Every structure is written in structure tokens, then in C-alpha cells.
Length: 120
Image (cartoon, rainbow, N blue to C red; front, side):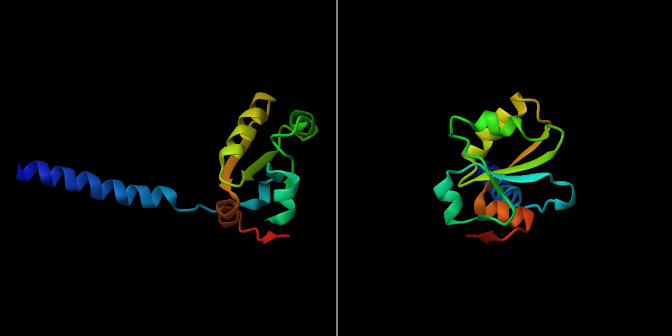
């Protein structure tokens, strides 16, 4: 019984440590990034966005049309409020032939990852 408690404790302790390290932000070398894309609504973008970000609302009917105008060989970082819409946008962009597209999560995580300030 003691060994079972020890194993359970060890598993829980390691999952906490791994969970913390998995959530830590990694910075991105912005020198090779073509564009940072904010896929939130126009109103959300106006309320605050990353400096230099381009706004293309993933939920708008013309998202694919606007994205198709971009260079599909470029490197793109995509963010939204929580990362959910950014994931949808990344999948859509990859289906359009984009190869180097990364979901960098929500706006706060994106700011930490890129080093870009949130501006209005």
C-alpha cells in the first residue's frame, strides 16, 4: 500500500512539474516572420492588439479570400483571444497551401512569445 501511495505521489508531482514547464512561453525569432495575424473581430482588434499585427477575422465570410492574397511561402504567427480561433485559422491556412503557420495562442501569450507590445 505504501508503494502505491509513493507511485501515485510521484506521478502527481511529475505531472505538476511537466505541466508548469509545458505552459512556459517560448520566444520566437521575429526576424523571419512575414506577418503576425490577429484573427479576432474588428472590434476586438480595435480594443487592443499586438503592435504591427494584421487583422483578418477568421469568422468573417471573406477570411479565405483575404488570406489567399498573402504569400503562402511566408512565415505567419496567428493569435486570437484564447487560441481557439487561431487554431481554426491555422487549419484553414494550411488547407490553402500555407506551410509555416503557427498558433501562438491568446493575445497575452502571443505578446510574451513575440515580445510585441499590446497597443490600441
